[in-house]
Image (cartoon, rainbow, N blue to C red; front, side):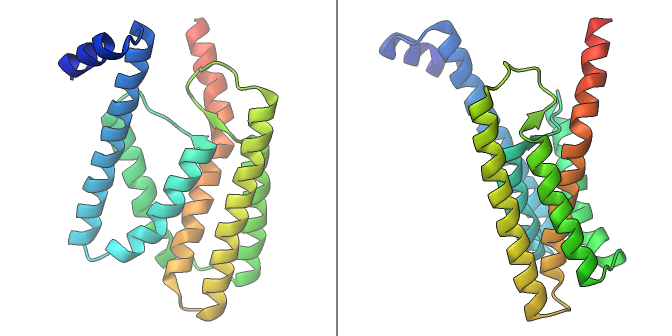
Amino acid sequence: MDFLMQKAQQEFGFSDREISLIRYSLLSICYDISKIILFSAFFCITGKFIPFLFALIPFLFLRSKNGGVHFKTYLGCVAFSFVYLYLSVNILPVYVRLPLWCVYLILLLCAVINYAVGPTSLNRKKEKDAEYIRRTRIQTLALTAMIAVLIIVMSAVSSQNNHSMITFWTLVLHTLQMAITPKLKEVKYREELG
């Protein structure tokens, strides 16, 4: 990869910072693709590939738009994401049954929390400007509303539709991580101060 980065820098005149950002972006994409391949293989082997897709798709959209908990290591990220998806697909829809009115109320709470808290991450990046935050919050609210409508429609079609509950629990777990991220960020900041 270093050879390619040096070649690109010479060929296109990128600065060291630009090369560093390109390298980071490429590594991030490779890591994300490798996680999706790992998770897909696991859920395919366990016979849960289609239910996994009902968790993966909202997971990817929500994380890319609204942020969430990030880890310093690839292994930490893989472990957290796996537990998140495993709970959404195999545990919560099976063992936690809620009446539809409760599901609808929780969906409304998820929309409010995701709007109020996002976008966020544990990384101490440059602060985002107010317009970016406002635009992202509106996009997240729209995305959460679309997911909620999908869940409501799937639930209306069949009260036994487990896929709607997988998507529901994916949204709930995303919202929970969004709710705790500001507190984790505060703790991390205090630790950095000493």
